[in-house]
Amino acid sequence: MTIHLIEAHRGFNSNIYLLVSDRACLIDAGCGDDSSGVISQIRSILGDRKLDLMILTHCHADHIGGAPDIQDEFGCMAYADWHEARAIAGSGVRPMVCGPIGETDSFDLGGYRLRVIETPGHTPGSICLYDEISHSLFSGDTVFDGGVGRTDFPGGSAEDMIASLEKLRNFDISYLYPGHGTVSADGNMSVRTALTMMEGW
Image (cartoon, rainbow, N blue to C red; front, side, top):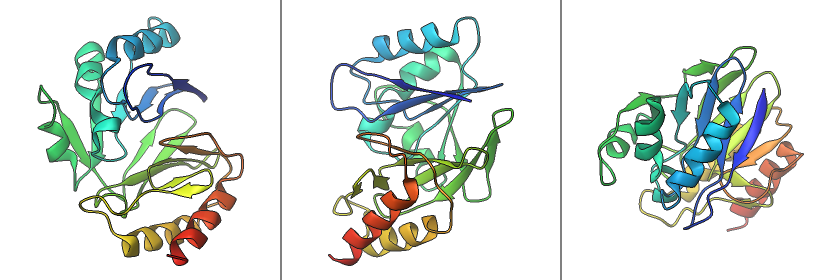
């Protein structure tokens, strides 16, 4: 599997990851202010291949704003945690198709499998995606390299965040691909650091 960071050059955007194996998967979509640039980069990487699916880690606008444009362009199905999928489908200027997923779901990309981990705290429906082959974690806004997602937004919960970080401690995480900031080469350490920060609040 090859992991590409797609860069949006306008607005306040989440990190956007394009995973390419036998199937191609986009994780998060940015705020939508630079959809044409994001789409151009995806097309440049995929060539004649299709974008098979898009997974949204939570419902905040900096992660989902570009999703309708990307879905219109590529015709791919989008997925989000069942707590937030309906709200995402009806958000933005245009409605979009967004299927609900949860803890028991996984996505086979061909040689790699993304497992859905429900990690509420930043939002009620925040998820992480864990690749069981490479032990990589796509963490959305749950945990960053040296930080943790905010819990003071509507629907956020410090107690839920601590429980979610405790859950992540049960996974062997090599690389951490967060929703903002830089990639960490020691995801286990990032989770421990985030948990220490939360327990100190």
